[in-house]
Amino acid sequence: RNALTSVLDRHSFFELWPLWGSSMVCGRGTIDGKRLGVIAAQCQPTVSIHQTTDPAHPKSQSVKTENPGNVLFADSSAKVARCLEDCRLENIPVVLFANIRGFSGDTTEMFRAVLTHGSNIVNSLTKDGPPVFVYIPPYGTLRGGSYVVLTPTINPKRIRLLVDPRATVGILEPSASSAFLWKNKDHQSL
Image (cartoon, rainbow, N blue to C red):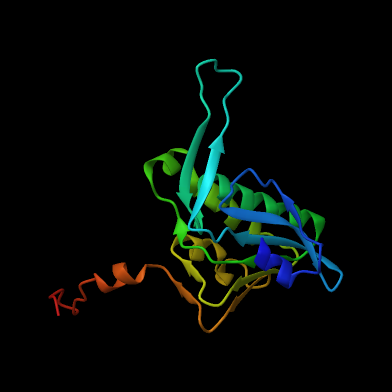
């Protein structure tokens, strides 16, 4: 949130849904007086998730968990998709500050439909609308499934990818890339 205030006009940022999908920050702001949607990854090492009790279920309890930052979970993916769709309907451009390591692939997130909500990001971006500027800041990263859902090939007329030379973009983590066994055309290990 502090980094956004250095890019946006002073006191112009208004955050939407601050308690929902807390690994991502979504809102509205202005640059040089022009209104736009703003989406950014929460760049803290961990993000606290507080799930309140369900009033319809008398035995439910509130639960507080810690999740890694810079990761798309089911709720934060739904939040990003909702913000993108709202901005498209409001006909305002979006700046997405991407420093995202990927989607959470654990069993709980799969049960919560993390891939479904990730595909909703793609669905919103495939529609015609105002531009979406995906900016990867210095030393930031866009990796894994998050790169797949934000790549300009989804809608080249709408998505612009801006990458700082010190940032990284890729599908796999470096450790996973180095673990590959490269094979020649006869499928023999090199």
